Length: 191
Image 1: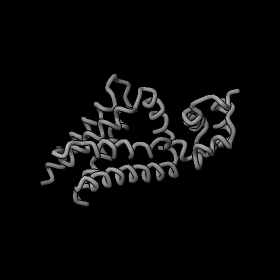
Image 2 (image 1 turned 30 degrees about the vertical axis):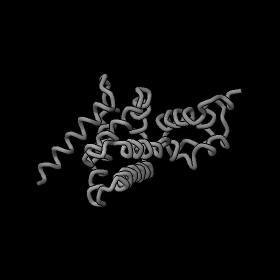
Image 3 (image 1 turned 90 degrees about the horizontal axis):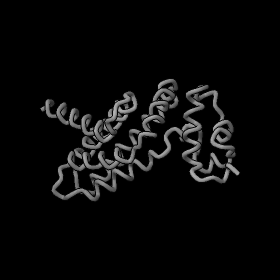
Image 4 (image 1 turned 180 degrees about the horizontal axis):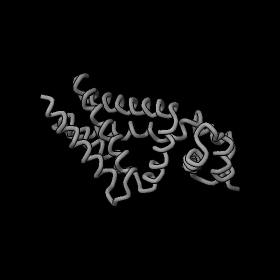
């Protein structure tokens, strides 16, 4: 029976993005998402997500953990920005080409909903906070950690936007490195 198949979480994400793109976020119900995901139930949906907004931001809590782990493992000699660059590479390398397609559709859905734009901003702030906390754990001062984290979060989300709006063969890692380099150059001009 379909409801017991593996990968229910990922199927729910794909189904939600498809439905939101087809009929809009507000017009889509949790029951429709569950059914589109292969005959799953509303109960199964709520086992994985607290509400239908969260299905669009699935996995973002993992992003902060990935970056924190890479930051913790970075060489002690690495500067705060070098450390963030390593963490960005670690996170970006976890994104597959399938995520690019989902991300492309997700961006369009978010762009059409003020509620989702607000949630997206909240998730971005959470990622920045996780990066900053991981840097502070390494002994980086609060101000420097916060600035490096903001640059890192801005680089990731800017690169993600570029990656999902193109059809070239470059990876998200390529885009992240490019964007992070641009931001570091821009920051150096401020002096």
